[in-house]
Image (cartoon, rainbow, N blue to C red):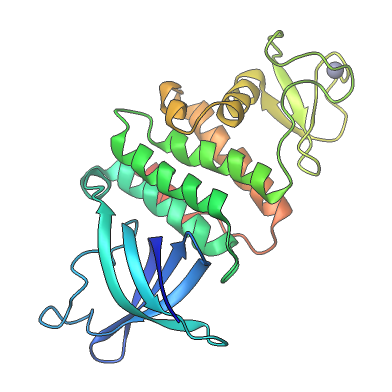
Length: 255
Ligand SMILES: [Zn+2]
């Protein structure tokens, strides 16, 4: 069956003498693996740079039933995202995003919403004037919603005091159900949960209710930024087995 779809390149490895095996996240089929014949060799490569990680491409594949490796017949870049290759913060943020997708998505499970969020996030990282890392954080918070274990950040699970109307100094976030307990309900912070600052709570809530593009409007100091990276990864690890720390984010740390 010959099919056409849009896809984001997650990963590519050399295969035999001249080819590559490319992992893609596609709009129509979710995560798929394809063989790109001739792609390793400059002379025979008909795909240009469309198979570089983080590229948003339009592809044509020969999809084989009952196989998990398909044949790529055509691939063209849809939108060039050049700044992802030249700006180190953007590059490591984008790489962390595709590393995440490669890690958590199952093979050949279509999820159009996740595809749109992924393509939109890479475009937003490329376009951001600052704070491009926030795009990844916002993506993760929205991804939790899509996966059915979203955070509940509007109000305290117990007394319903609202996040937007209170300046909690810190709250207890329960990783198990994504709900939080405010300081009025647990003044000595002895209830079960991970202690997070009020600023962190408000930032997560902002990411959840605003568009991914708007996430870059928030600026953080290093401590809050590191705490945000840490809490979203802890939450992810709690809900999905076998998730590693994102390597690309550790690299971002070092720049
Ligand atoms: Zn409360």
